[in-house]
Amino acid sequence: MIDTHCHFDFSPFRDAPERYWQAARESGVMRMVVPGVSESNWSAVLSLTERLQGVYAGLGLHPCFLDVHTDTSLDKLDQALAARPARCVAVGEAGLDFFVANQDAAQQRQQALLEGQLWLARHYDLPIILHSRKAHNQLLRTVKAYPGVRGVLHAFSGSEQQGKQFIDAGLMLGVGGTVTYSRAQKTRRAIAQLPLEHLVLETDAPDMPLAGFQGKPNTPSQVSRVADVVAALKSCDRDHLVAETSDNAERLFGFD
Image (cartoon, rainbow, N blue to C red):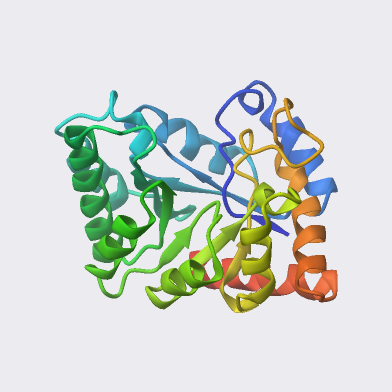
């Protein structure tokens, strides 16, 4: 399995990354993508790719970290991507979060950072990892303005129609803990109907704990439970589900 979205440089993982990665591998996770969220954590994310076999990185400017992004952050991201090692396989985490940014000025800053990162993703021919909360329509319009961009909308929690729109815009959909909650009927119905060739698995660990694990840090090992639920929703063989979603991630990120 591949966990396509895990913040492995965050606590509690940062204190014992080898131990947590060994547990993930024992659960069947063979590769993992760790998105960067700000300039201050890019070195930590890249360091993990050097220490741990099977771990890959994205470098990006997360919309929820506006307070640490500066007027030079996009230029520095450009420089970091130009000098990226082979295991840096994506731009991101980028995107829009209008739940956090509920003022026009903050939304405009998020928009400018998103457009800059979409430009960089296309420039360096890298996939982009996208975050969206309370901003699906604006994110979709923005992605469509950059034809040729490919990537993944992580933590998908929309309807079947929304999923198809993002797929048509060139994105895969990251499926995580949301689908393990029985109350998430809209998203569970969407995942049941959306084409498997456009889905990848993720945890967003240590965030987004699965049903039954509320209050505990999420871990990459939990992608196995996500796979169980998605296979059940799609009424398909679990091994087939794992093989297809892993192939999708390999195709998107081009792992070495």
